[in-house]
Image 1 (cartoon, rainbow, N blue to C red):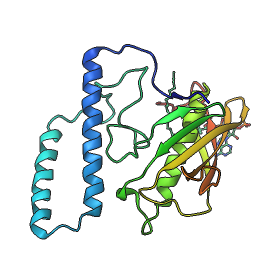
Image 2: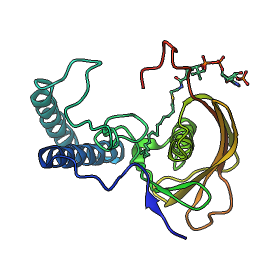
Image 3: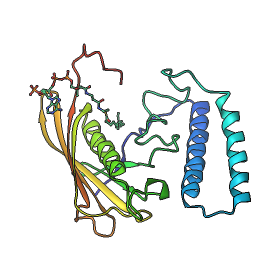
Length: 216
Ligand SMILES: CCCCCCCC/C=C\CCCCCCCC(=O)SCCNC(=O)CCNC(=O)[C@H](O)C(C)(C)COP(=O)(O)OP(=O)(O)OC[C@H]1O[C@@H](n2cnc3c(N)ncnc32)[C@H](O)[C@@H]1OP(=O)(O)O
């Protein structure tokens, strides 16, 4: 079965922008690692104090370069994925590291979640599972040339989604009706990919051209 990364195109973006995007992705990854380590650390007080001081200093250094809210990042490119959305932005350390590939049926994402996404002990927080499904189902709609905003996302939690275990999320279009696209998908263990742990159905609606909330 052929696969192809969704959101990456055979396209030569300007070299300076490519370099900048790579650095932004590396920073996102480094801070994501810090967040995961923070949530797991049984460190002695002096180590915690050192981490507090160092982290505050780093944050202060970056804050000086903040772009105003509502303005585009200089890393943005109309043909490349955004780097900061909370659902998949590689430069956003809060975003789970979602990478989606096209399959014959729809799309698939393989992901292993870090400690920062834990809800009940050892299990993924239900809101994070919903975030992942919203994201991957939206990709299924977008990669079929439809897109749209999430009008509803109905999730069913069948079994616990473990932390630090490889997962597979699959989604496919169920129905198309004018501006509406219904998409179905589920999260499973990569080792047992046919058994849904959390399943979802979502409706994505392409807004009318004159829709006021259409800022995407
Ligand atoms: C070359 C490219 C390569 C590929 C690149 C890939 C890149 C990938 C990029 C990206 C992928 C990842 C991106 C992640 C994104 C995640 C998704 C989100 O989280 S979106 C944020 C959360 N959602 C909102 O903020 C919506 C808020 N709501 C709204 O804005 C509106 O309500 C909206 C747009 C959903 C509908 O507004 P209206 O004005 O169009 O509404 P009306 O005309 O009344 O409805 C249209 C139809 O939809 C039905 N409908 C609307 N809402 C419904 C609902 N809740 N339940 C059932 N039906 C509903 C209605 O009944 C109507 O159906 P009838 O035409 O009559 O058959």
